[in-house]
Amino acid sequence: MEISLSKRNETTLAVKFIIFYKDGIAKIKNVPGRRWIPEESIWSLPYTLEVINQLLMTFKDCKFYVEPQLLEECYLLQSYEQVNISDSLSNVSQWDSVLRQSLKDELLLRGYSSKTVKAYLGQVERFFNYFKEQDMFWNHQTIHNYSLYLLQKNCSHSYVNQAISAIKFYFQKVLKQNESTPYIRPKKEHKLPNVLSLNEVMLILKAIHNLKHKAILYLTYSSGLRVSEVVRLRLQDFDQERKTLHIRQGKGRKDRLTLLSDTALEVFLRYYQQEKPEIWMFPGQNKEKHLTERSVQKIFEQALVSSGVTKKVSVHSLRHSFATHLLEGGIDIRYIQELLGHRSTRTTERYTHVSIKDVRRIKSPLDQIDD
Image (tube, rainbow, N blue to C red):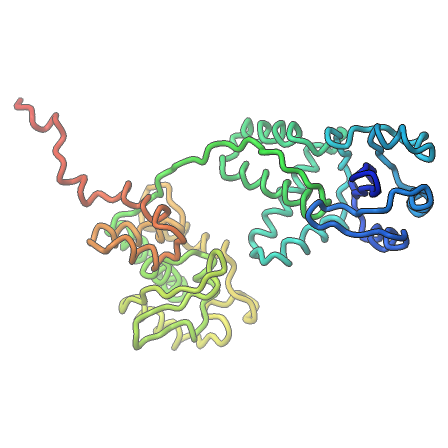
């Protein structure tokens, strides 16, 4: 465990755990007059020789970093390492199962989805693996160098931004480092979604012969679902009378209603009557668990090959196509936003850039030139 020690004012000291373990809290509670200051993420102690002596005895196996002013004032600290706390580079090279579990716990306590928890754990793990042969320090240059490394590997800007967010979260929430450096993030890429034509969608859907697989992709397209949403459907999510589908706790942990088309419902009911699923509408090999997202991706990939469609698209392109086809059909963008579960219309507006409804009315200057 590593601890930084500095003066808060003339009567109190500031103690911060740099490398943090849970038993540190239990130990510091043995020091009289200690008080946790959540706004500063530090422990406040009375500035007395008795308290300093007990602090050093309690954490005798720990490494202390002491600010210069305090080092000069207190003879008990003369043998400890001097460091300017505000500019110090904290050694954070340790990464073990305890810290990994601490990161997971902090994410779960804040309501992050299982997918985000997995992504953040992976990002922090890769960060530590990259620096495993060198001394690691928590400062802006570390993250700057790591970001450059990822970009040089041709990682997407969104991936790099996620890595920065995950690493900052780890140091701030797990190691309790109150680091507020504004890290440079790569500019967000503005890529147009890959969209299929109506004819291409039908070619893909008709290329499927397995009834379960057909029901999955029909619902994905006709209701504009994410893969994570279609695999988690239950019977109570289908409202046949109102022709709606209830998506529970979608992205951002939001519920929403979307369309349930007659054609998709017909396919689904045929599948349901044949298979009689009980818990999940699309169970995996273990009936108590839903089908994995990767399984749906493979189903789409096989259907794409069988259909003869050569566009580079994924199963998520069915959702993009759903939104674009509605827009081209004259549906107001605000309704499309609700159906997709977007927080802002700005996200939905990207489909206006791939819609060809109005583009077809524009005549190229070349076509206006007589031969």
